[in-house]
Image (cartoon, rainbow over all chains, first blue to last red):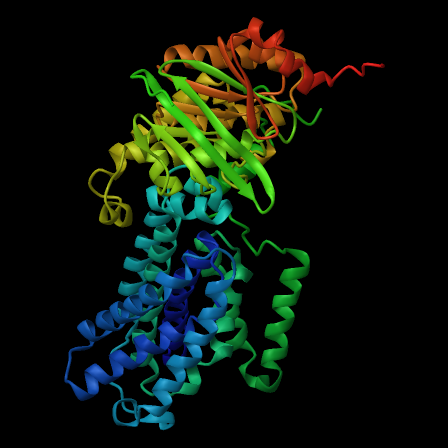
Length: 293
Length: 262
């Protein structure tokens, strides 16, 4: 496998981990975010600083990066997620900008706007694949069970959810914490992949991209988020030779999906036996229901 | 204010204002354990507001609401639900994008919990408890006659079926007190007739206390031995079906007053 292909695969899986995090929050819990680059930055910088300045092994550094992102998510979520509506989306923009500005100005620790070069490139294909498989397994398990149903209940009708005995603010904060953890881990792996990080990488554009990828794939579909991120990452790579038009094509793809499939590529269906059953059931109507004739 | 031992739910002197509107005024009544009580009244009388006060959707301005002798005031909705109250909604609040079965499972899962790590890994109790939740939910769907619709999206069900699904979902909470908010709204006479049977049957089989808001007089008169009638936020009559039917205040509320010429 060429270095280039390997690089693309690693990037796909890192973006996939981040997309699963966003999908859990925006797709399954119905909380819109415009600032998830903040958690990515926290993960990246924690990993970089711990490995370079404190001599940590990369594995605990990446995990601590994820945990720190989770703690920040939890603390931001506590006051903002008690409120219904788009308060978190607004707060997340502020959070992302604050984190970026802190990194840019905290010279002694983060090296400011010049960024941190020379991070050990520990993110090899098997390591990324290992993280990806474990975290994808966790995400798919989570949505198929007690907590996944609670998230969806909060998303679909928060009044009904609380009158079915769910402490909705608690579940919303839980969703954000898990989401931030996923994105933080992705950030740590990303730092070990490109070996040089800079605050400008985690700007508003990055946040928007992370959310739009999930909307593109289908809100409420974990496999949709993965499919969306794959397509967008590949489109970005394919058109690298004509890079001045890249954002144009990226925008065009998003607009086309919004026009022709507003619910996203997969809607809220998962790739798997259930989708297969759904597709085949159109041919054989359920008992008691009239067929096409 | 009388608080006898058998009262499951008791409201005393409950007031609720929405700005200048006195939506509920000095409301006092009790629901006996194991009873099937009807709450009737013209549109805008404040019936649904009473349900919203009991379940903590709105705070009460003054008065007291006791459930099994404990105050529900100052508790959050989800805490009140866990005390043993379940309700349905006048304007159906199903999870439209989930399947019929998932809707019931969402409520059913409270009684069959498992841990966070088990949710994340599907190890441990996950498999066993999920199966129990699924089987129990299917049983409840069968009970309300929706077993063959389990895999359909809830939003695609006909109206009458959606009402039945709400009842199944509320039953999945295993409540002691079930609040039904206009379960027969939008139903045709045959459906109302079938619903009558369903409510009577679940009342008997699930050892429930039921408080039902209804507009269909024939339904209320037939199944409720005890009826509370309210108008303009206040209780105007209370008693058995016969008593209510002949009560002058009730007739006045529903039919208006005769104009007497001098």
